[in-house]
Figure (spheres, rainbow, N blue to C red):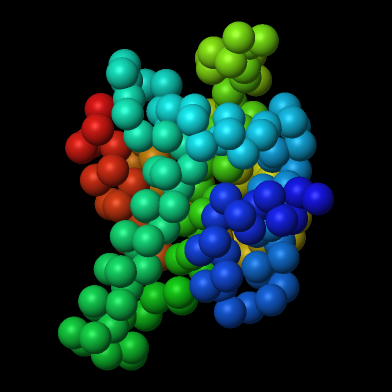
Length: 179
């Protein structure tokens, strides 16, 4: 069953306290995985980006690492300044972190030899757009869709929520260090 696959790949989902939000995040991942029938091995081995050569960081590693960095930043801010001075909804932060790149499973395609390439779908629609569409379809809150929408270059110039600011920076830290 896909739910077990998602939870095995992304154990950080369990950090979401809101059960309904957690189920919606899982449903997005299930649909994205089903789209091209991605296996766990493929998801653990495909590059997290096709925008650079010889990328040594893999897709699931990137998703999980960014999520963990976002949680860590939120905890540091909360410990330093208190919950009231850093108005971050941790459930939204985790959900948005885990879903920011889910659209890449539509953007990417695979050849029979396992090679990954940008699909026709991906040439026309980058992952922030397909990710927001998928999140909308599954009833994710607009605050989570906002994180997905503005996490990459498509969000340049947009006012970002506290959660989106955190995720945008951790995503680019991971990207800039490995490209």
